[in-house]
Image (tube, rainbow, N blue to C red; front, side, top):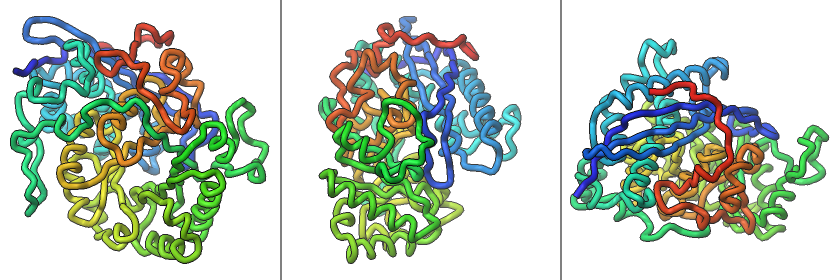
Length: 462
C-alpha cells in the first residue's frame, strides 16, 4: 500500500558562508558560497500535513564552470530556486517523493531551466539546475519520513512505492539485469551504519607541512597543513585535488602526499582531477610511473575520479586504458542513471554519488550501478549545516566503497556550529570517521527544533 503526498507549500532561505581558506580544485577557487535552505510542506490524501527541510550549497564554481562572473551565475541559480519553488507547489501530482521527483524532472525541470525569466542564454546548465533542485527534493523526502514517523531510508520499499524500479530504470543492453519487482531498498544497507569513514580533501593550494606555510594562513585554532589535519582528526583517507594540466606538478603532488600517507599510516588515496584532463594518456602516464617509482603510493590509490570533461556527448572517449590500471569513477558526468549507463559502456568503473544531484537521482543511480556491479562512492559539495546530514546518511545507507568525502569542517567549520552542538560527531572527524548515532527517528533526523540557528527572513514563500 502506497502513501501518496503532494507538495502544498514551500519557503526558501539563502545563507551566505565565507571560507576560512580558499578551496582550490581543478581550475576553480571557492572562497565563499551561498547555501539555499528550503522548508517543504506536504499533504496526504486525508489532508494530514508534515514539513521537511533540505539544503545545499549553490556551488557554481563546481556545477557551472564558465567565463561568466561568479556573481552572475549564483544570482541566476537563486532565481532558479524561486522558479522551482513556485513550480513544485503548482505541480499538483501525488506520490512518493521518488515518484514526484522523477515526474517533476521528466515533465517540468528541463523546460524550467531554459525559461526566459532566468535571463541566461542557453538556460541553467543541467548540473547547476540539479544543485538548485536538490534542496527541494531532499526536503520532500524529509517531510515524507516525518509524515510517516519513519527514517527516510525506511520508506524506500514496496509498502510505500506504488511502482517498482522498472518504472524508472532500464538495464544496460545485453545485461541479465532486471528491475522488475525490485525496489530501492533492495540495493541499500539493511541498517544505517553508525560509523562511516571520512575522506579529507587536499585542496590544490593546501600546505602539506610546516615548510610550505606562507604566513597568509588564517589565524585560528584549526590545523594549517595536511599533516596537522591528519594528526588532529586521525585521518585514514586522503583525496588529492590535481590540476590535470601540469603532468610533473600533479605527479610530484601525488608522490609527496603518498609519502605523508605512509608516514602517518593513512591507508587510502584518491586522485581527483575535476574534469581537467583532455586525454587518457595523461592519467595512464602518471599511474604507470607510480608503479615503477612509488609503488606504495600506487597501491594506496583506491580510485581515480572524473579526470575528463563531464559532458560525455560533447567529449566522447573510451577510458578503458585508465580503468585497466585503477578503478575510474564518474562524478560531474553522472547527473542521472542514463549517464551512468553511458559511462559504463565506455569503460568507467564506478560512480560518485552526491545528494546535490537530488536525493531521488542518488537513490536511482545507486540502484542502477549496484545492479550492474559498479561500486559507488559518496562525494562532497563542501556541505555545511543541514546539508551535511543527508550527505552522511547516503554514505551510511548506500554500501559506499569507503565512506564519504567530507570537507566543510576544513573550509568553513564555524558555519556549522549550531548544528554541531546537537550532532557533534556529524561535524567532527575524530578517529577519521563520522557517526550517525545522534540523529532523530523520522525524516533525516535533523532535530531542527533543537538547533539554535536564527534564519534570515524567507526570500520566497509559495
